[in-house]
Amino acid sequence: MRKELEVRSSYGSPNTSPVIEIVGLRKTYGEGEASVEAIRGIDLIVNEGEFLSVMAPSGSGKSTLMHIIGCLDTPTSGSYRLAGRDVSHLDEAELASIRNKYIGFVFQQFHLLRHLTALSNVELPLVYAGLTPNERRMRATEALRRVGLTDRMYHRPTQLSGGQQQRVAIARALVTDPTVILADEPTGNLDSASSEEVLGWFGEFHRAGRTVVLITHEPDVAKVASRVVRMRDGLIVGDGPPELVFGGTGTTIDGANPLVPAIKGFDSASGKLGPK
Image (cartoon, rainbow, N blue to C red):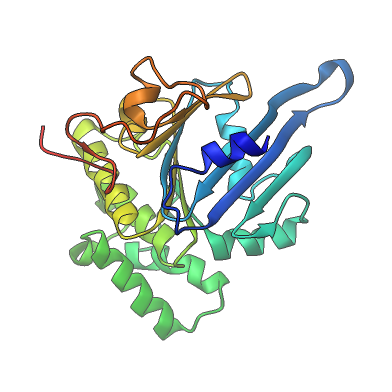
């Protein structure tokens, strides 16, 4: 197990520390003959500043893994340490506190409150964090500026395009200065132009030193990350740079080689696609 963990943590800089440490993780739903083992014993380390995508078809366990990484659920067995803290068996109140402090969520459905402006939507996590109204307004304004929506911050979701709504959701994820940005199928409701724009923002955040974990079932989306984990039937079956995981070589842990040059047009250092 130690050898695997060392290999899996080798994609980050040697000067960074693990943000996500998962060992022997299992998740079972139901009991007896009706039980379903969604995750069947996986080990995974994600270092600070990595841009990781988790790719798998429906029913492979990626959504369950996302819920556990995001502290929306707890494992049946095994351990999960987030930013050095064991969060495997915390109660719901403790998990809620951890989510607000460490995780910035971006969902496929945006989850914006329709009656609130973009600015008020971005402020919401800061309300739960106990910040003053002035602090909330300043930080939410800055977050919207970072995603290029200064001129739309007083618009409501129904007055924004799908791509703009997702950028509001990204600003909301950033506003608490989270340890991990966790994006679940963030381009699922977007057209190709908006999808490319949103993925470009994740690349920018990675280049700025953010840890980004992107959950997707689409290979084209997964490839924008500098590291790809593939899942099947509750297990990790591939882990490495995208050009190896999708290129037919290096699709197992021991075979992955992070030193192989990146695919044409992909900058693994910044996590961005170059000109086509």
